[in-house]
Length: 245
Image (tube, rainbow, N blue to C red; front, top):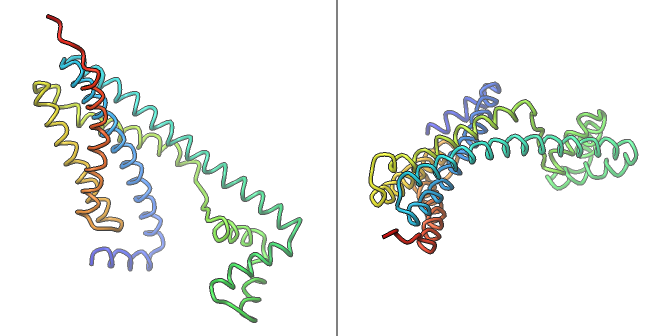
């Protein structure tokens, strides 16, 4: 019911719709960075803990992985956002060129797009004439309907990098924290349990504000993340360093 009310408010107030899009984008960045930090660093510290059983080495490896992961994820978020913007602009320029050089073919494409939507006859021709009367509208329609692309705001690249990077740091410290206060053997299981619970909570929250069944989304995220991290533990067992007599 809350989602339905929120959707009705969005329809009545377009500015709220833009706010929700920004919230969704920020949530995606937080989940991307946080989940990656949780899973990757958990895998690293489980592998090191299984191989050495030395809490100092585990903490050093975990912290090194934490900050390397955060910088890497932030850089990926920045470059991927800029790449999306570059791709959109290149495709848009190509559409402008096609409209200038092959307007009849491009008109036919617009006609075909709206014919598939059920429009026909005079109404279809009116739609085609209206869209193709202005190049900007024409290109925007082709980008959205033919290429399924939406413009990417380059100013969001730095914000995305910061959000993803900080989320990766926070996510990474969660599985590492038990090793700072508990014996290694106990820390392994506490870290796995805490990480699984956090992943479950993130999955539930994501489903509640988007779509899907909260319990199912949470369970899927917890299982996938935990199983992925356990791969690191398996490697640590296989390469376990013998204790020095």
